[in-house]
Image (tube, rainbow, N blue to C red; front, side):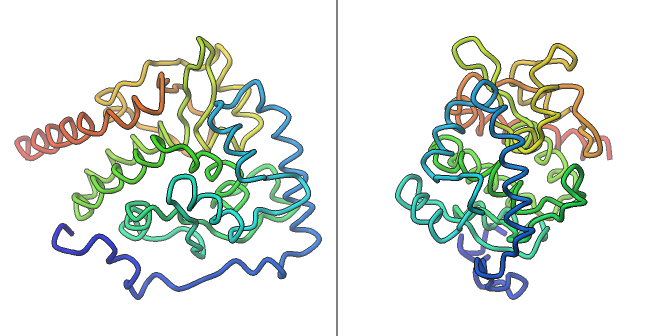
Length: 261
């Protein structure tokens, strides 16, 4: 992978050129967005990270309008140099990390149906937009995302390395907590899009650990129910500054595996 130019992903034939067709959204789509937005947003002023709440204001998300990627890209480009790249759904790991490494956040444009409000197997655009995109206005957060993806691309042909790095992504970008002014807050998108896990993650039921790269790389996660442990950062700068440690411990663990055979 290292021999490829950084922007190789944009010429890969697997990555189709797609756009959000805003005019195609139905009344049901707008209702689904509104219900999900109004169900979760009131929980967040006292639960979400300040950077997320500031991001919601910056991208002007509201209950009555499905996120408009064209307008959103105008805001993101000016604030952090990022943009949304439309994909049909889940994509191959190398394409996913390739987009992030080029400051493009992959997002679907389809919304779940009314009978899927509470559970969805594959993330839809409510999760992608509502939960992820406000934080794309935070520079340390997006710099971490870009560079973590660069590390993943170096090891893209090693499934074990990708599995280990997915733990970092999972316990930060998807299910991370942050301590702000002594109070636990949420920045992980998997929590931000779930009213149930928002309440659970901040309660005294799960375990809360200080952010520790080695511990995370040695911690498995699950996708089908709430996490039983969460890792807490002190700042987004701390997240970004941990990148050299992630690379160092990853190389160490890969070498150990190779030694064991």
